[in-house]
Amino acid sequence: MELPQGPLCQSCGMPFKKDDDFGTKEDGSKSKEYCFHCFQNGRFLDEGVSLQEKTEKNVKFGVQMGMPEDMARRMCENILPKLKRWQKE
Image 1 (cartoon, rainbow, N blue to C red):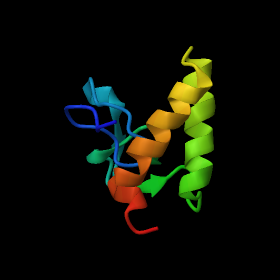
Image 2 (tube, rainbow, N blue to C red; image 1 turned 45 degrees about the horizontal axis):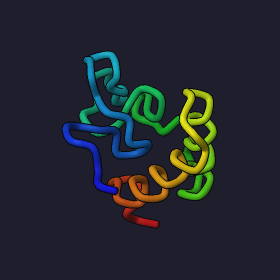
Image 3 (tube, helix red, strand yellow; image 1 turned 90 degrees about the vertical axis):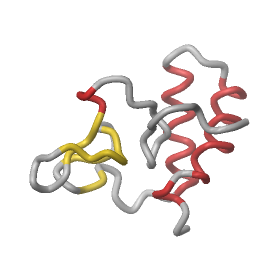
Image 4 (cartoon, one colour; image 1 turned 180 degrees about the vertical axis):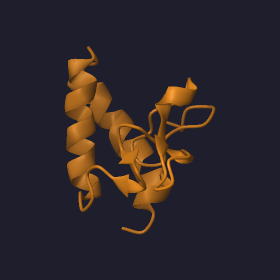
């Protein structure tokens, strides 16, 4: 499974579709790397979370959005480790 086309959050993989999807830096400007679910005022909302914990959180969210759990898990396990935030783990 490959990364989706277009810009996406480098923490959770959410595609950026509109300006409101972007998180904010400490100075209030838009982050071009992270979404508003993950990053606000220059900080990760889930600071200290591990890649495994983020994967589990995103799988639950995918299921809530109507995705089968096995499909959500495959997507998360294939996409999240390739994102910038998780490259340092």
